[in-house]
Image 1 (cartoon, helix red, strand yellow):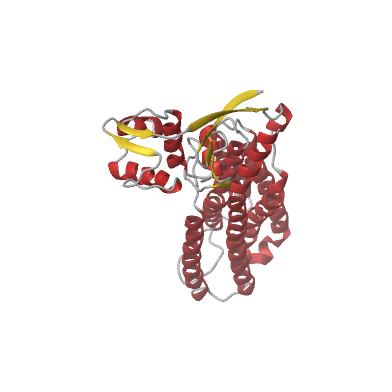
Image 2 (cartoon, rainbow, N blue to C red):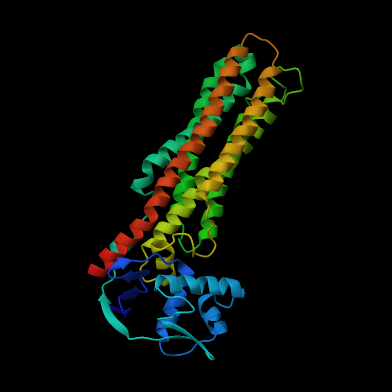
Length: 372
């Protein structure tokens, strides 16, 4: 059993390790930095703390402007139902800022979840399994379809082997992408940046080995015929691979890495900063080294990719030379677009749903943990 403290004053109750401020028993929205600022004031109730002391404790010595400090202080005051001109709890004195009032420090005994429950998410989590399989399958299909696309203009010549190469590409990329995400999940969760780099490396190496294998099949001469100079089949496939890797990193690897790291942080109730980051603002105080890909930024990026893709596709199709398999090539170009943006949309839909689940999951878990 471990002892932790809850601070009660007036109609408020602040739970530091759960990251919750209650007013008349109802949660009050308070972002991470204002929450820490209030906690420091409560921990030093009756004692005047200078602005610099508060900055050092809350922002760990980081450079903070007066405007930023007062914005956070005003946020705390608003949550407590006061203003700087009419303070109820936080008084500004010649010595700094002092919390006044009857503050009760309540001891709460809690039991930590057993070791078996703490070992969560050591493999691919079942709640993400459908997304992982669907995303990896679409991603692998891009590589497989690209093999057929780059030889489509001379399909009769390459048809005896192309289906075998497509099957190999599909299976290989499916396996390596699953391994890449599993590695992201299994490597020490404390090494966030290392996990991300290893996961990305698995994707890159897997794509590189596939390209090296396909060089024995893809010709070094241009196959697609157009009014402008086209790439050789090998160069075109390498270009496709670069596009696919960028897509996978931005929409598959990076969001998955963020989600599994934050889910791990949510399950660590002993970590006060993580509790605040997830219970009040899941991304306002992120674990060191983690990148938070904003949903709206990814959505805008996918839209930008779409505009560029439409322009490039229109240019290509307008300049194609007629051939016996032109129709097949055009259909494959459209199919590649569907797969490319289908992967982005699938990943964004999953990511949006999981982001909406992170905050309530954190609150539910901590309430259960307090009852245990």
